[in-house]
Length: 397
Image (cartoon, rainbow, N blue to C red; front, side, top):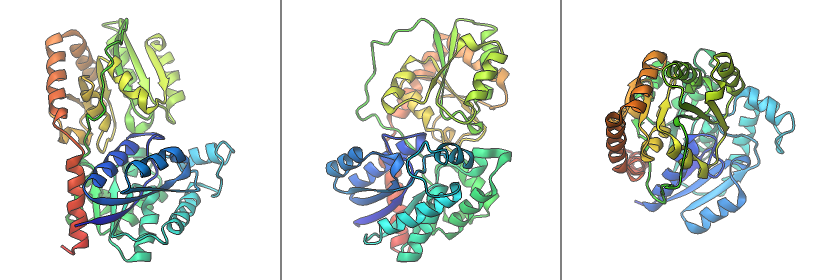
């Protein structure tokens, strides 16, 4: 069955703030390989014209449509006020983030007014209103794809407005896709959604165009944190574990790769703990720099407070880096060869870091078994699962 999917997103390479951009790119690419046409609608600030044209020329099944909005991935109300309304971004419309989401919705619907499609697929809360509007306009089935919830991102500091947008999208959707059972359970518990319409589609990784840099040299053992420097990702727990490790082995460097609203606090915290000389901040990394930083690392740590999936773990394992993973993460549903820890147990986290740095047999076992495990993964399976869900809705099953 040939289908055309209208997909709303707000992140796509080469401008990816977090994992969602890489997920969308791989999903779209593999759907197109399986005879699915994609109209991908997103804010102008999160892709570039040359890349969009390149994708469309390379693959006639993918059409990128950009709307004139300054929304960027993982944007918060405070960030919108600080970066957009201060004049740092060129496209200013809404008085606040939520008015801007409304503007994005209107422009997105105008952009696809003449398009024909069989199904609507919206990624995360900023696009849910656009998905609902497209469903009302066309009568076509709506899927909302949840990569993260407001409970994951903000914890006790939950934004009620974001929660209400999420809940509305989840209720209005004909089907819900979550990236893990961990997230499915949260949606059932906190949003009251019928479990029968929730489908789990785990993320994956790919080895296409993958190369190892054999020229990398370093003088210290390196423990890596890679992700947004926010409450959700647990960088403060990473620092506390680093402090404990350095008390036993001072020949270790801890690299924090990424940016976010906790970045200044974490830099100050490293100084307060007396470990500033051993903690390196790389800032946000471009796509081409990510594999290199993984390949420099001896250990990767994902200390997230709440992690719907955690695709960085698969990327680390693909690069031959043993991973220590928070038990509050969905990625542990698809991998076995990692060390697991409670995010708050920084004593145990530091013990596991030291064990991987000290014991070659353990390090090599986790490394090789993990590499073997992820080498069997591909994005074909998630794409096939999405197509099954599409067919079920389009066919009325």
